[in-house]
Structures are given as structure tokens and as C-alpha cells.
Image (cartoon, rainbow, N blue to C red):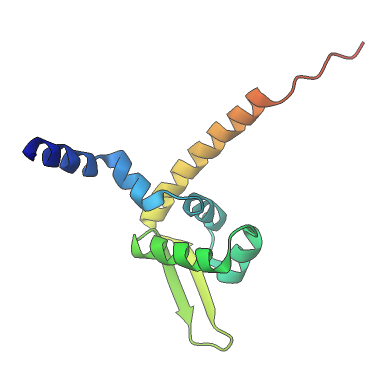
Length: 119
């Protein structure tokens, strides 16, 4: 029993598992990518990622802010205005997103149908 608990503890300490816990899921990396080096408002993110539900976007933004990847700035205005930007930790994650984008582009290129040469 003790060996099983130790093995489980080692798995939780795994850096890849830790990163996946913070960045995993369908939307977080896409949100980080859309924010990039800019300051983005909620409405802008909603337009840039139309497939995400409002509830899920709010949830993921909150999670990323709690993990220290996003800075959330609220203005005391009516209607409410909220802006999001990447923190230093978020910019590190953006580098990962850029690498994933390169990998995705390479995969797309490899899977692109090869057209027959013109005669």
C-alpha cells in the first residue's frame, strides 16, 4: 500500500502533469494565444473564439487568472469593462503555444494533399 501512495505522489510531482493541470483542457491555450502580447477585453475574446460558450470563457479566464497566467483589470464603469493581459508566467506559456502552432503547421503541411504536376 505504501509503495502505491509513493508512486502516486511521484506522479503528482511530475512537471508535465503540473503543466497539464494548469494549461490542460480545450480552451486555455487558445485563450492565451488570442491574448498574446496585447491587452484584450472580454468581448474581444468572445468574438475571437466564437465556439466557446460564455460560461466556459468566464470559467477559463478565472482559472488562468487564479493560476497567475493572466492579469485581470476591472474598471468601475457601467457597462462593466474588464481587460485581460498575460503575466510573466503567461508569456512563458505563450512560448509553448507558439511551439505548438509550429508543430500544428508542420502536421498540416505533411497532411496536405499533394496536387499532381501540371502537364
